[in-house]
Amino acid sequence: MSADQSERQADRDTIASMRREYAARELQESAVDPDPIAQFRTWFQEAIAAELHEPNAMVLSTADERGQSTSRIVLLKDIDETSLFFFTNYNSRKARDIAANHKVCLLFFWAELERQVRIEGHAEQASREISEAYFATRPRGSQIGAWASPQSSELPDRDALAKNQADAEQKFGDGEIPCPPFWGGYRVSPSYYEFWQGGRDRLHDRLAYTKSDKGSDWVLSRLSS
Image 1 (cartoon, rainbow, N blue to C red):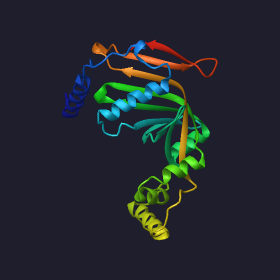
Image 2 (cartoon, rainbow, N blue to C red):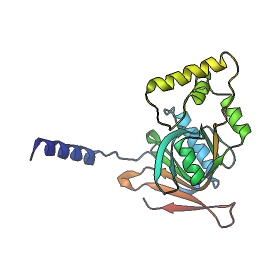
Image 3 (cartoon, rainbow, N blue to C red):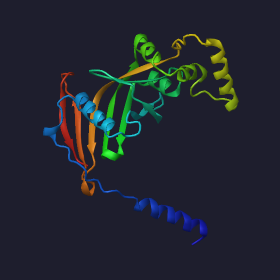
Image 4 (tube, rainbow, N blue to C red):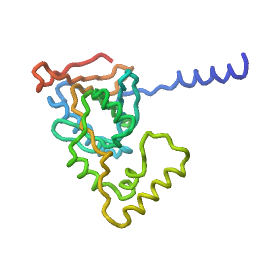
């Protein structure tokens, strides 16, 4: 076996041997809220209480008009009675994907709690009032950054982005920075939730909430791990 083959085999052996036993909790139907967004709020608050690093970080998966999927980390920034919200540049790749295909998936993974939440749903732009209200709460540097970054566009070098930043700082000076017209929120309206709790011997607990035919009720079911 050559040196390169030996290294590749060592990598495969190392990856294959990576294993963690889950056994912290169980997830029973009797213990969850009949409303999935209320159940999500409970788990989210427990993630905050556990002082996890950025518990609001979530994987957002989208697909374009060709069906090509892509994923990235974004931050959950609000929850209401029916929806979850994140904010971004409306010219970004994720925004272009959503314009072509409104179906998205959100994924939260809280490793320390051995928990995962997967949410499938429909994304649409939030109201301008919601976008402007959230933008006003952002740090000034982040507000400048929203104007400076043509998100997902190709740049010649790092200096080009720095110049955009300097130009925006000069433009607004010490004055109020308005929310860019090309920047704002998305409302994700879920049609499916799955709550995953790690279990011993890979026998995990998976509880799924699916919208009923009536549209407003949720049906709870258990999935095999």
